[in-house]
Length: 333
Ligand SMILES: NC(=O)c1ccc[n+]([C@@H]2O[C@H](COP(=O)([O-])OP(=O)(O)OC[C@H]3O[C@@H](n4cnc5c(N)ncnc54)[C@H](O)[C@@H]3O)[C@@H](O)[C@H]2O)c1
Image (cartoon, rainbow, N blue to C red; front, side, top):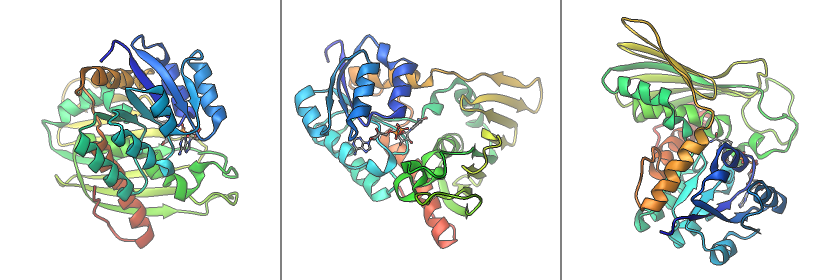
């Protein structure tokens, strides 16, 4: 591998702007070679943000053949997954993919099979796993007995009159799949695999425009293989405060994560509470690990592979099915 990784992007919206500003645009060992988006203006904006480096494309296959990247960043909304991953597999290109990996398990399973067949390095944007607070709690939980978790994402969401993909259930998969997925993934990372999901949708809490088909809120109950349980809430109808939170108990510990940066307060049965602050530049941390892995040709500390991220998506897909049928559903990755 030459000293610089040639990087190309499929999907160039808000989250790409976040990765670039968090540090990626200044990585000395990255050469930006392509920006592809169905909206040319978005691709041009990211190209400009990266100082004019790389070319703008509307067709990802053309970008790959002309720009000759070493790796891809797949940063499209949930409904647009499938084709970008198939291109990565066809061209044997390692990729970083934003969460959730899909809103439909058949799309995810097909991608996972291709990734396994050609042996690709992949990394999913579950950046919370890389936080010191999460690593500290994980070390402790691994030697203890998990009991309960309670948490989620509460906010106002996008303008309910907007035509944003986010408010459209068939495009975003709903808030639990699209946004609270960070908390679901953290729950899995700390307490292990989930065997049953029961989800209750909450609707008609406020006036919506004609595009709004997502739930206003939801409450999702998870049962873990080890017998522990979690209750995860989501609301995009409550712009009165609430934010991001996860409170968990083992037989020997209580830990409370708060805010986007997941600062934590840990209480053990004796001693003073332990606090670990969150990091602001966490996108740069996960991006560094991915770029290092591409250069090494093997994982250099990737904490969420595609196959792992698919298991988190399976929980959300099971929740969507449970909301539809009113019964618990077993997640199937
Ligand atoms: N890790 C995080 O904290 C985090 C934060 C924000 C968003 N995200 C995730 O990133 C993904 C993108 O979100 P966003 O906020 O950038 O959305 P966005 O709407 O700002 O941008 C998405 C871009 O993808 C483009 N696009 C859509 N279909 C495409 C296709 N088939 N090919 C190429 N481009 C296509 C759109 O034109 C748009 O420019 C979502 O899955 C979201 O959940 C993750």
